[in-house]
Image (tube, rainbow, N blue to C red; front, side):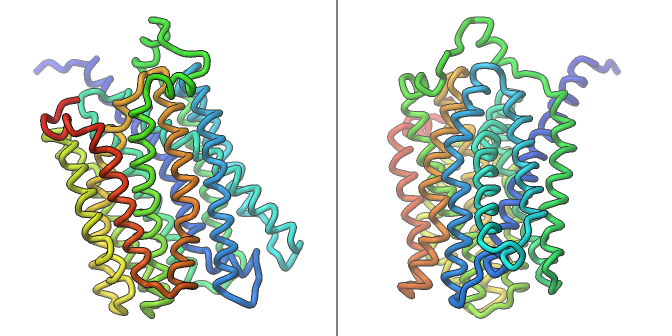
Length: 425
Protein backbone atom coordinates (compact mmCIF):
# COMPACT_ATOMS: atom_id res chain seq x y z
CA UNK A 1 0.00 0.00 0.00
CA UNK A 2 1.50 3.31 -1.11
CA UNK A 3 0.91 6.35 1.10
CA UNK A 4 0.90 9.74 -0.56
CA UNK A 5 2.89 11.67 2.02
CA UNK A 6 2.25 15.00 0.35
CA UNK A 7 -1.50 14.52 0.44
CA UNK A 8 -1.38 13.22 3.99
CA UNK A 9 0.73 16.21 5.08
CA UNK A 10 -1.63 18.65 3.43
CA UNK A 11 -4.59 17.03 5.19
CA UNK A 12 -2.84 17.26 8.55
CA UNK A 13 -1.97 20.92 7.96
CA UNK A 14 -5.57 21.67 7.03
CA UNK A 15 -6.88 20.00 10.20
CA UNK A 16 -4.33 21.88 12.28
CA UNK A 17 -5.29 25.20 10.70
CA UNK A 18 -8.99 24.53 11.27
CA UNK A 19 -8.34 23.73 14.92
CA UNK A 20 -6.12 26.77 15.54
CA UNK A 21 -8.42 29.27 13.84
CA UNK A 22 -11.61 27.84 15.33
CA UNK A 23 -10.16 27.72 18.83
CA UNK A 24 -9.68 31.48 18.89
CA UNK A 25 -13.29 32.01 17.80
CA UNK A 26 -14.44 29.58 20.49
CA UNK A 27 -12.68 31.59 23.20
CA UNK A 28 -14.16 34.89 22.07
CA UNK A 29 -17.71 33.57 22.02
CA UNK A 30 -17.27 31.79 25.33
CA UNK A 31 -16.41 35.10 26.99
CA UNK A 32 -19.14 37.05 25.16
CA UNK A 33 -21.79 34.51 26.15
CA UNK A 34 -20.63 34.27 29.74
CA UNK A 35 -20.87 38.05 30.05
CA UNK A 36 -24.43 38.03 28.68
CA UNK A 37 -25.57 35.17 30.94
CA UNK A 38 -24.06 36.92 33.95
CA UNK A 39 -25.83 40.20 33.12
CA UNK A 40 -28.07 40.14 36.21
CA UNK A 41 -25.16 39.39 38.53
CA UNK A 42 -22.76 41.88 36.94
CA UNK A 43 -25.38 44.64 36.88
CA UNK A 44 -25.39 44.64 40.70
CA UNK A 45 -21.59 44.78 40.85
CA UNK A 46 -21.03 47.58 38.34
CA UNK A 47 -24.40 49.37 38.03
CA UNK A 48 -26.20 49.17 41.38
CA UNK A 49 -29.80 50.35 41.22
CA UNK A 50 -33.00 49.92 43.20
CA UNK A 51 -34.86 48.82 40.07
CA UNK A 52 -33.57 45.44 38.86
CA UNK A 53 -34.90 45.97 35.31
CA UNK A 54 -33.13 49.35 35.09
CA UNK A 55 -29.86 47.83 36.28
CA UNK A 56 -30.20 45.02 33.74
CA UNK A 57 -30.85 47.53 30.97
CA UNK A 58 -27.60 49.27 31.90
CA UNK A 59 -25.56 46.09 31.61
CA UNK A 60 -27.31 45.31 28.31
CA UNK A 61 -26.23 48.79 27.24
CA UNK A 62 -22.63 47.82 27.94
CA UNK A 63 -23.26 44.69 25.88
CA UNK A 64 -24.50 46.91 23.04
CA UNK A 65 -21.47 49.23 23.32
CA UNK A 66 -19.18 46.40 22.26
CA UNK A 67 -21.25 45.92 19.11
CA UNK A 68 -21.02 49.57 18.19
CA UNK A 69 -17.24 49.17 17.99
CA UNK A 70 -17.34 46.13 15.70
CA UNK A 71 -17.40 48.13 12.45
CA UNK A 72 -14.22 49.88 13.52
CA UNK A 73 -12.51 46.53 14.00
CA UNK A 74 -13.89 45.36 10.65
CA UNK A 75 -12.44 48.38 8.87
CA UNK A 76 -9.02 48.13 10.52
CA UNK A 77 -8.46 44.38 10.42
CA UNK A 78 -10.38 43.89 7.18
CA UNK A 79 -8.16 46.40 5.41
CA UNK A 80 -5.02 44.67 6.68
CA UNK A 81 -6.39 41.23 5.80
CA UNK A 82 -7.27 42.14 2.23
CA UNK A 83 -4.17 44.20 1.50
CA UNK A 84 -1.38 42.47 3.43
CA UNK A 85 -2.61 38.97 4.21
CA UNK A 86 -5.02 37.03 6.39
CA UNK A 87 -2.54 35.96 9.06
CA UNK A 88 -1.64 39.30 10.69
CA UNK A 89 -5.16 40.44 11.63
CA UNK A 90 -6.02 36.98 12.92
CA UNK A 91 -3.19 37.24 15.44
CA UNK A 92 -3.56 40.91 16.40
CA UNK A 93 -7.35 40.74 16.89
CA UNK A 94 -7.04 37.81 19.26
CA UNK A 95 -4.29 39.60 21.20
CA UNK A 96 -6.55 42.63 21.60
CA UNK A 97 -9.34 40.39 22.86
CA UNK A 98 -7.02 38.73 25.39
CA UNK A 99 -5.91 42.07 26.85
CA UNK A 100 -9.46 43.41 27.20
CA UNK A 101 -10.79 40.17 28.68
CA UNK A 102 -8.01 40.13 31.26
CA UNK A 103 -8.88 43.75 32.09
CA UNK A 104 -12.47 42.78 32.91
CA UNK A 105 -11.21 39.87 35.00
CA UNK A 106 -9.18 42.14 37.29
CA UNK A 107 -11.51 45.17 37.24
CA UNK A 108 -12.55 46.50 40.71
CA UNK A 109 -16.31 46.77 41.24
CA UNK A 110 -18.53 49.78 41.92
CA UNK A 111 -18.21 49.33 45.67
CA UNK A 112 -14.42 49.82 45.41
CA UNK A 113 -13.91 52.65 42.92
CA UNK A 114 -17.43 53.90 42.17
CA UNK A 115 -18.45 55.06 38.69
CA UNK A 116 -14.90 54.60 37.42
CA UNK A 117 -15.49 50.84 37.43
CA UNK A 118 -18.54 51.27 35.20
CA UNK A 119 -16.53 53.47 32.83
CA UNK A 120 -13.66 50.99 32.58
CA UNK A 121 -16.06 48.09 32.00
CA UNK A 122 -17.51 49.97 29.02
CA UNK A 123 -14.00 50.68 27.67
CA UNK A 124 -12.94 47.03 27.90
CA UNK A 125 -16.13 45.86 26.23
CA UNK A 126 -15.61 48.36 23.42
CA UNK A 127 -12.07 47.04 22.90
CA UNK A 128 -13.48 43.53 22.73
CA UNK A 129 -15.94 44.73 20.12
CA UNK A 130 -13.10 46.02 17.96
CA UNK A 131 -11.37 42.65 18.26
CA UNK A 132 -14.42 40.57 17.35
CA UNK A 133 -15.09 42.86 14.38
CA UNK A 134 -11.83 41.66 12.86
CA UNK A 135 -11.87 38.07 14.07
CA UNK A 136 -15.16 36.34 13.29
CA UNK A 137 -15.54 36.90 9.54
CA UNK A 138 -11.79 36.80 9.09
CA UNK A 139 -11.69 33.30 10.52
CA UNK A 140 -14.40 32.19 8.11
CA UNK A 141 -12.60 33.75 5.15
CA UNK A 142 -9.40 31.98 6.14
CA UNK A 143 -11.02 28.57 6.48
CA UNK A 144 -13.07 28.74 3.26
CA UNK A 145 -9.92 29.70 1.37
CA UNK A 146 -8.01 26.82 2.95
CA UNK A 147 -10.52 24.11 2.01
CA UNK A 148 -11.98 24.20 -1.53
CA UNK A 149 -13.17 20.60 -1.60
CA UNK A 150 -15.82 20.95 1.13
CA UNK A 151 -16.90 24.60 0.97
CA UNK A 152 -19.92 24.42 3.26
CA UNK A 153 -18.08 22.40 5.89
CA UNK A 154 -15.18 24.85 5.72
CA UNK A 155 -17.54 27.79 6.16
CA UNK A 156 -19.29 26.14 9.09
CA UNK A 157 -16.32 25.74 11.41
CA UNK A 158 -16.47 29.26 12.84
CA UNK A 159 -20.20 28.83 13.50
CA UNK A 160 -19.40 25.52 15.19
CA UNK A 161 -16.70 27.21 17.26
CA UNK A 162 -19.06 30.05 18.20
CA UNK A 163 -21.73 27.57 19.33
CA UNK A 164 -19.16 25.54 21.25
CA UNK A 165 -17.93 28.74 22.88
CA UNK A 166 -21.50 29.67 23.81
CA UNK A 167 -21.92 26.21 25.34
CA UNK A 168 -18.81 26.69 27.44
CA UNK A 169 -19.93 30.19 28.42
CA UNK A 170 -23.30 28.80 29.45
CA UNK A 171 -21.62 26.01 31.39
CA UNK A 172 -19.35 28.49 33.16
CA UNK A 173 -22.36 30.64 34.08
CA UNK A 174 -24.13 27.55 35.44
CA UNK A 175 -21.17 26.63 37.62
CA UNK A 176 -20.71 30.19 38.86
CA UNK A 177 -24.39 30.38 39.82
CA UNK A 178 -23.82 27.74 42.51
CA UNK A 179 -21.29 29.95 44.32
CA UNK A 180 -22.16 33.04 46.32
CA UNK A 181 -18.89 34.83 45.75
CA UNK A 182 -17.85 38.24 44.47
CA UNK A 183 -14.57 36.84 43.13
CA UNK A 184 -15.19 33.52 41.43
CA UNK A 185 -16.95 35.17 38.45
CA UNK A 186 -13.54 36.56 37.47
CA UNK A 187 -12.02 33.13 36.83
CA UNK A 188 -13.60 32.51 33.37
CA UNK A 189 -12.40 35.93 32.15
CA UNK A 190 -8.86 35.39 33.41
CA UNK A 191 -8.68 31.81 32.18
CA UNK A 192 -10.00 32.81 28.77
CA UNK A 193 -7.34 35.50 28.38
CA UNK A 194 -4.55 33.06 29.27
CA UNK A 195 -5.78 30.44 26.82
CA UNK A 196 -6.09 33.12 24.15
CA UNK A 197 -2.37 33.85 24.53
CA UNK A 198 -1.67 30.17 23.87
CA UNK A 199 -3.85 30.32 20.75
CA UNK A 200 -1.92 33.36 19.55
CA UNK A 201 1.33 31.40 19.94
CA UNK A 202 -0.10 28.61 17.76
CA UNK A 203 -1.44 31.00 15.12
CA UNK A 204 2.01 32.36 14.41
CA UNK A 205 2.72 29.27 12.28
CA UNK A 206 -0.35 29.67 10.07
CA UNK A 207 0.34 29.85 6.34
CA UNK A 208 -1.16 32.40 4.00
CA UNK A 209 -4.02 31.12 1.85
CA UNK A 210 -3.48 30.19 -1.79
CA UNK A 211 -6.31 32.50 -2.86
CA UNK A 212 -4.61 35.54 -1.37
CA UNK A 213 -1.18 34.58 -2.71
CA UNK A 214 -2.56 34.15 -6.23
CA UNK A 215 -4.44 37.43 -6.05
CA UNK A 216 -1.26 39.17 -4.94
CA UNK A 217 0.78 37.62 -7.76
CA UNK A 218 -1.85 38.60 -10.33
CA UNK A 219 -2.07 42.15 -8.98
CA UNK A 220 -5.73 41.68 -8.01
CA UNK A 221 -5.50 43.40 -4.63
CA UNK A 222 -6.71 46.94 -3.93
CA UNK A 223 -5.32 49.99 -2.11
CA UNK A 224 -8.66 50.60 -0.38
CA UNK A 225 -10.44 47.22 -0.36
CA UNK A 226 -13.66 48.35 1.31
CA UNK A 227 -14.40 50.96 -1.35
CA UNK A 228 -13.87 48.34 -4.04
CA UNK A 229 -16.26 46.00 -2.21
CA UNK A 230 -18.95 48.64 -2.53
CA UNK A 231 -18.06 49.08 -6.18
CA UNK A 232 -17.89 45.44 -7.27
CA UNK A 233 -19.64 43.34 -4.61
CA UNK A 234 -22.89 45.09 -3.65
CA UNK A 235 -24.79 41.80 -3.73
CA UNK A 236 -22.28 40.35 -1.26
CA UNK A 237 -22.73 43.30 1.09
CA UNK A 238 -26.54 43.00 0.96
CA UNK A 239 -26.43 39.25 1.51
CA UNK A 240 -24.04 39.58 4.43
CA UNK A 241 -26.15 42.26 6.09
CA UNK A 242 -29.27 40.10 5.66
CA UNK A 243 -27.77 37.04 7.30
CA UNK A 244 -26.32 39.20 10.06
CA UNK A 245 -29.77 40.60 10.87
CA UNK A 246 -31.19 37.11 11.21
CA UNK A 247 -28.31 35.62 13.21
CA UNK A 248 -28.15 38.61 15.57
CA UNK A 249 -31.85 38.64 16.42
CA UNK A 250 -32.41 34.88 16.30
CA UNK A 251 -29.41 33.89 18.43
CA UNK A 252 -29.57 36.60 21.07
CA UNK A 253 -33.33 36.25 21.47
CA UNK A 254 -33.71 32.50 21.11
CA UNK A 255 -30.68 31.73 23.22
CA UNK A 256 -29.60 34.49 25.59
CA UNK A 257 -32.92 36.25 26.18
CA UNK A 258 -34.65 32.87 26.26
CA UNK A 259 -32.96 32.33 29.61
CA UNK A 260 -34.16 35.66 30.95
CA UNK A 261 -37.77 34.94 29.95
CA UNK A 262 -37.67 31.40 31.30
CA UNK A 263 -36.59 32.72 34.71
CA UNK A 264 -38.38 36.09 35.05
CA UNK A 265 -41.65 35.10 33.33
CA UNK A 266 -41.70 31.30 33.25
CA UNK A 267 -40.64 30.94 36.87
CA UNK A 268 -37.85 28.44 36.27
CA UNK A 269 -34.77 28.55 38.45
CA UNK A 270 -31.59 30.01 36.98
CA UNK A 271 -30.05 26.53 37.06
CA UNK A 272 -32.98 24.99 35.14
CA UNK A 273 -33.05 27.71 32.49
CA UNK A 274 -29.29 27.61 31.97
CA UNK A 275 -29.32 23.82 31.78
CA UNK A 276 -31.99 23.89 29.07
CA UNK A 277 -30.00 26.41 27.08
CA UNK A 278 -26.76 24.47 27.51
CA UNK A 279 -28.43 21.32 26.14
CA UNK A 280 -29.60 23.27 23.12
CA UNK A 281 -26.23 24.89 22.42
CA UNK A 282 -24.35 21.60 22.69
CA UNK A 283 -26.71 19.99 20.17
CA UNK A 284 -26.40 23.10 17.98
CA UNK A 285 -22.62 22.74 17.89
CA UNK A 286 -22.93 19.05 16.99
CA UNK A 287 -25.49 19.63 14.22
CA UNK A 288 -23.72 22.51 12.45
CA UNK A 289 -20.97 20.39 10.79
CA UNK A 290 -23.55 17.64 10.14
CA UNK A 291 -25.81 19.97 8.18
CA UNK A 292 -22.74 21.43 6.45
CA UNK A 293 -21.82 17.97 5.17
CA UNK A 294 -25.40 17.55 3.94
CA UNK A 295 -25.10 20.89 2.14
CA UNK A 296 -21.87 19.82 0.44
CA UNK A 297 -23.61 16.70 -0.87
CA UNK A 298 -26.85 18.42 -1.94
CA UNK A 299 -28.12 21.96 -2.57
CA UNK A 300 -26.85 24.16 0.23
CA UNK A 301 -28.97 27.08 -0.91
CA UNK A 302 -32.23 25.16 -0.59
CA UNK A 303 -31.20 23.89 2.84
CA UNK A 304 -30.41 27.41 4.02
CA UNK A 305 -33.70 28.88 2.79
CA UNK A 306 -35.60 25.95 4.30
CA UNK A 307 -34.05 26.77 7.68
CA UNK A 308 -34.99 30.43 7.34
CA UNK A 309 -38.57 29.53 6.42
CA UNK A 310 -38.92 27.26 9.45
CA UNK A 311 -37.51 30.03 11.66
CA UNK A 312 -40.14 32.40 10.29
CA UNK A 313 -42.91 29.97 11.20
CA UNK A 314 -41.66 28.45 14.46
CA UNK A 315 -39.99 31.34 16.32
CA UNK A 316 -43.16 32.36 18.25
CA UNK A 317 -43.53 28.74 19.38
CA UNK A 318 -39.93 28.67 20.60
CA UNK A 319 -40.38 31.71 22.83
CA UNK A 320 -43.80 30.55 24.08
CA UNK A 321 -42.11 27.41 25.39
CA UNK A 322 -39.67 29.62 27.32
CA UNK A 323 -42.50 31.07 29.42
CA UNK A 324 -44.45 27.83 29.81
CA UNK A 325 -43.13 27.28 33.34
CA UNK A 326 -42.14 23.72 32.43
CA UNK A 327 -38.51 22.62 32.45
CA UNK A 328 -39.27 19.95 29.84
CA UNK A 329 -41.01 22.40 27.53
CA UNK A 330 -38.10 24.82 27.94
CA UNK A 331 -35.75 22.10 26.72
CA UNK A 332 -38.06 21.35 23.75
CA UNK A 333 -38.00 25.04 22.81
CA UNK A 334 -34.22 25.01 22.81
CA UNK A 335 -34.09 21.83 20.72
CA UNK A 336 -36.26 23.47 18.05
CA UNK A 337 -34.12 26.59 18.20
CA UNK A 338 -30.84 24.73 17.84
CA UNK A 339 -31.94 22.71 14.79
CA UNK A 340 -33.03 25.85 12.94
CA UNK A 341 -29.91 27.78 13.93
CA UNK A 342 -27.67 24.88 12.88
CA UNK A 343 -29.24 24.68 9.42
CA UNK A 344 -28.67 28.36 8.68
CA UNK A 345 -25.29 28.62 10.41
CA UNK A 346 -23.97 25.61 8.48
CA UNK A 347 -24.68 27.23 5.13
CA UNK A 348 -24.86 31.02 5.42
CA UNK A 349 -21.19 32.00 5.49
CA UNK A 350 -20.14 29.95 2.49
CA UNK A 351 -23.06 31.38 0.54
CA UNK A 352 -22.34 35.01 1.36
CA UNK A 353 -18.55 34.82 0.86
CA UNK A 354 -19.01 33.55 -2.69
CA UNK A 355 -20.25 37.02 -3.64
CA UNK A 356 -16.89 38.71 -2.89
CA UNK A 357 -13.66 39.03 -4.82
CA UNK A 358 -10.56 37.77 -2.99
CA UNK A 359 -9.27 41.33 -2.60
CA UNK A 360 -12.46 42.54 -0.89
CA UNK A 361 -13.61 39.39 0.88
CA UNK A 362 -12.20 40.07 4.36
CA UNK A 363 -13.04 43.76 4.62
CA UNK A 364 -16.35 43.64 2.75
CA UNK A 365 -17.88 40.73 4.63
CA UNK A 366 -16.52 41.94 7.99
CA UNK A 367 -17.82 45.49 7.64
CA UNK A 368 -21.27 44.53 6.34
CA UNK A 369 -21.64 41.91 9.06
CA UNK A 370 -20.39 44.21 11.81
CA UNK A 371 -22.54 47.21 10.87
CA UNK A 372 -25.66 45.08 10.71
CA UNK A 373 -24.75 43.31 13.94
CA UNK A 374 -24.08 46.65 15.68
CA UNK A 375 -27.58 47.80 14.79
CA UNK A 376 -29.52 44.60 15.42
CA UNK A 377 -27.34 42.39 17.62
CA UNK A 378 -26.30 45.19 19.91
CA UNK A 379 -29.89 46.29 20.54
CA UNK A 380 -31.71 42.93 20.56
CA UNK A 381 -31.49 42.35 24.31
CA UNK A 382 -32.62 45.90 25.09
CA UNK A 383 -35.52 45.69 22.61
CA UNK A 384 -36.66 42.39 24.09
CA UNK A 385 -36.36 43.76 27.60
CA UNK A 386 -38.48 46.74 26.56
CA UNK A 387 -41.11 44.52 24.93
CA UNK A 388 -41.37 42.14 27.87
CA UNK A 389 -40.32 44.22 30.88
CA UNK A 390 -42.01 47.50 29.95
CA UNK A 391 -44.83 46.68 27.52
CA UNK A 392 -45.54 43.25 29.05
CA UNK A 393 -45.82 41.87 25.49
CA UNK A 394 -44.69 38.27 25.88
CA UNK A 395 -45.22 37.46 22.21
CA UNK A 396 -42.91 40.30 21.13
CA UNK A 397 -39.54 38.46 21.18
CA UNK A 398 -40.84 35.51 19.15
CA UNK A 399 -42.37 37.79 16.52
CA UNK A 400 -39.15 39.80 16.40
CA UNK A 401 -37.29 36.58 15.54
CA UNK A 402 -39.83 35.82 12.81
CA UNK A 403 -39.42 39.32 11.40
CA UNK A 404 -35.64 38.87 11.16
CA UNK A 405 -36.12 35.59 9.27
CA UNK A 406 -38.59 37.24 6.89
CA UNK A 407 -36.20 40.13 6.18
CA UNK A 408 -33.34 37.72 5.50
CA UNK A 409 -35.47 35.59 3.15
CA UNK A 410 -36.63 38.58 1.12
CA UNK A 411 -33.18 40.21 0.88
CA UNK A 412 -31.36 37.03 -0.17
CA UNK A 413 -33.99 35.46 -2.44
CA UNK A 414 -33.47 38.05 -5.18
CA UNK A 415 -29.73 37.26 -5.18
CA UNK A 416 -29.84 33.48 -4.91
CA UNK A 417 -33.02 32.34 -6.65
CA UNK A 418 -31.02 30.81 -9.54
CA UNK A 419 -28.73 28.91 -7.17
CA UNK A 420 -31.77 27.73 -5.21
CA UNK A 421 -33.13 26.10 -8.35
CA UNK A 422 -29.88 24.65 -9.70
CA UNK A 423 -27.56 24.46 -6.71
CA UNK A 424 -24.90 26.28 -8.74
CA UNK A 425 -21.95 28.11 -7.21
